[in-house]
Amino acid sequence: MNTQHQQNPGGFGRRIFLAATSAMGVASVLGGPRASTAAPELETTKIRLVHTEGMCLAPQYIAEELLRSEGFTQVEYVKLVSETGSSAVAAGRADFSMWDLPGTIPLLDEGRPLVVLSGVHSGCWDLIGNDRVQTVRDLKGKTVAVYAIGGGDQILLSSMLAYVGVDPQRDIKWVASSTLADNMRLFEEGKADAFMAFEPQQQELREKKLGRLVVNTAIDRPWSQYFCCMLYGNRAFVNKNPVATKRAMRALFKAIDACALNPERAARLIVDKGFSPRYDFALGAIKAIPYNVWRSYDPEATLRFHTLRLREVGMLKSTPNDFIARTVDWRFLNELKQELKV
Image (cartoon, rainbow, N blue to C red; front, side, top):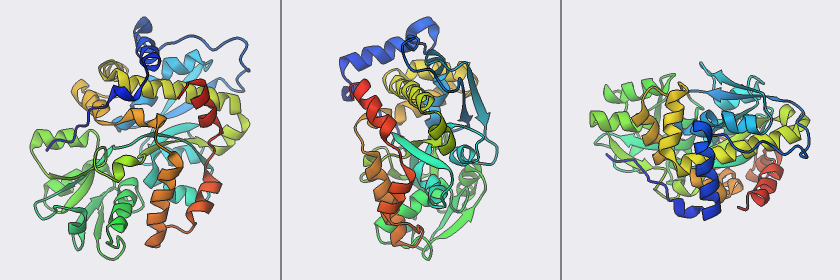
């Protein structure tokens, strides 16, 4: 089973490539030029991001020095225990987080104080099945392990099932295991026919020679054409601190570019900072995830695609148009695309 997807630096211009790679080489960290003294003053110099085992959040982990170069003097990482990154942001325990969109859609639909600020990347989930599962349609009548009903893996797979005409609420037996690690354990023990693997689980499966790759969301259409993870801000923080929000997003976008263009350096930094115990897993995850698509993909198209699928099967109250109108703020993204010459 091979789930790795090598990113194509051809999506970047020479200027962007040099800027991102040079940023990774300054004093062995991701430092860059300090924010101009003529720039508007930050409303706050403290910023909180989340920390979890998911390697798709790599840009957050390597962004600390870039955030400091934007004027943030306190950069904190809030370690998640049982909550998701987006729920921590909604609760005010963190200010920003990259997190999967499918798992955040229910929170947004409930009107939680979150705002969608940008897309980040596609392709951090793979659908893994046993010998009885060759396609997504083959899941009809099967048992699927998820970490939570309403979690990111269950919502994304529900959208996939709806896309191929399978009703996720009637045609699937969902088994909630409470953790991503337990999902894989249930699959290994034969108690589930399939589950959604999340980096670095794909690499663990290859080591163990287990499972059949059914869908690679980094490569297989239409899933590869849409964002998996988006960037969210706490609505009160964003409204109160627009300058800090824009500066934070600029640092995070530079970190995303750095992951795409110098994965070896990014992986080493993640291990050195204690965010991952294994360099090979960190490197494999960063190489597998298409970080360069934040520049070209339309985040609103991603929201529309998934909300339409979920509304069709009764898993979303809002219409796509209403959902988008209530939950997004593209002002900072559009300004930064102009500044960064995207």
